[in-house]
Image (tube, rainbow, N blue to C red; front, side, top):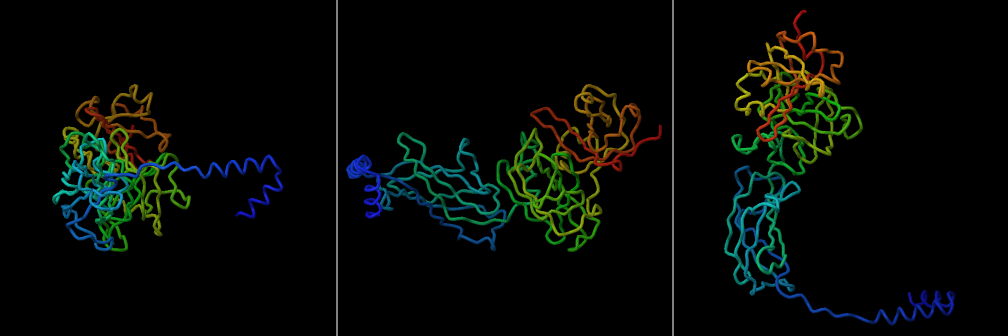
Length: 396
């Protein structure tokens, strides 16, 4: 480097040489700052249970942890002068629970830089999980952080994304327990007999259901349980990871993306879909749920079949109103009047169908994938028929 510098100065001439010399003098000036003192990090020791591995996952109820926390200084030694409260959060699926805006999962009091054993219970976790610790509260927070060793739990299924922690809790219908998490679903909760089957394809996404078939070959008939369906929002025509169109009856091997909700509809956003190496088979789709008008009273039953096909039988088609003019959304009186109806949208998939001639008629059966609009006390349920086979119409 010295030879390169001399050669460059000689070729550049005197002005460049003067600047080079000035820079060299300036480079010799060093400002010394006082060394860091006090706590700079937190050591989070996992007292119990023993760390495990992804191949030996813990059960869903094995969520109690005992920790011991130490405040460490720049020499990685205990800062015996540290006195304060450390906040604790669970980290899994790419984010903290609770969020930093909420009350911490637990806290630990440190005296002389060391805590007593702290026992806490993790929330319902999946995949790799650890405890995040930080000292950000109090009069003189050090902003020190630390993380415990990881524990491993099973990966999530569709039902884990959709099923509320408490069905009766306020807002249970409006969000997923894994809201804002980065989730990857790699298979069915039913093991070898299970399949993730696409039950509906729409202009901006598709719906998929986790079904259990007769055997490991996926032989139909197949069944679906509560909370076993979810909407995958693709923004445009649904395509898999190789750019192939997603079709009803396709089997999906992997779904990944951020779990969010839009007006109460739980969905994957910015998703990636990996298709399984199996031919599409609509016979694997589970039968639609059968609507009962009492479901509009508690709404829980409708929440259980969100993003799955729902059949409405023997309902009268209501007069078309402004909802039809604005959203092409027509209504079925299911016995509670047209003000408390099941809504239907056939636009895009059944563009040739005109509901006007059937106003006042009893429709033998309408089947469609169920989506909600749940905002506080405002609840609207909409079914989306997928093709002409989903409509059984009376003779006019």
